Image 1 (spheres, rainbow, N blue to C red):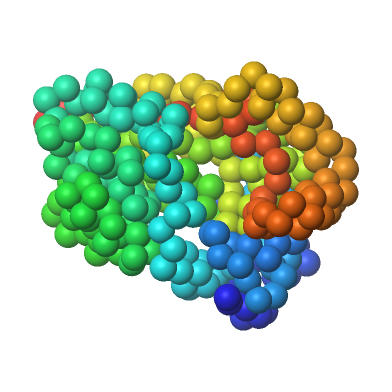
Image 2 (image 1 turned 135 degrees about the horizontal axis):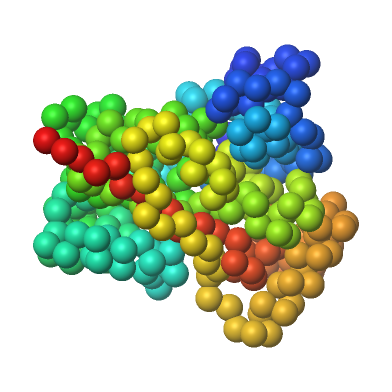
Length: 318
């Protein structure tokens, strides 16, 4: 269990004038209050973590949470010795999509870096043609990834040898954890080979239901989710960075039956209209049933609200 204090919050966003963490534009649109939480990255906290508000930049259209924590605080709390927060026994739909694209774009294999590889589930899906590497801040999960996927894993991108370049860099369910996704894209690009690709998955900030319900959307209810991109943001961001978008398509995060999706959609509507009531009712019901508490809000896997993005450098000429 870990507690929060005011020193954990980023001073840039503690003043009265909020600004976009990506482009710096002032006067973002306030989309509403986000729920407070006692959970962070699968770990129960000692004290309540304020949810803050969800904003949308009027200039670059990034959606983002304010206030945010300091980089040191995030690093400290992600390295929490857990290995099951984002792990699944059965390969996830997004892993299958990413692996298929890597195999398709690199038919002869190559050197792959999974940025945020966690316990190595995605890397393990790549076949023997690929030299597997990872970056993972959670030391316990990183050790598991090294064993599970036969990968070399570093604790940070800065720890990767500067001379090492990669044919594919993967960032699956990662972008939303970084305050400035443009800066993250620049850092990943520095590690990419001349003909390499970047493959990302993340929530779609412009899916119709999120735009309908603003801050009352399941994906932004997790306090570790701090910035949210869309296809429009990606197109704008890569235009000045020497990349072209090979693919940007939506998909459903999870495999649910028809009945599960119908019930989930009802839960999405209920949370969209009455978020606090839904969270209180769920907490009470889980307590009555003797089941463990849940983090976040209902909605995962119900609609096509995630993006698969494949980027490639503009044609390289030696």
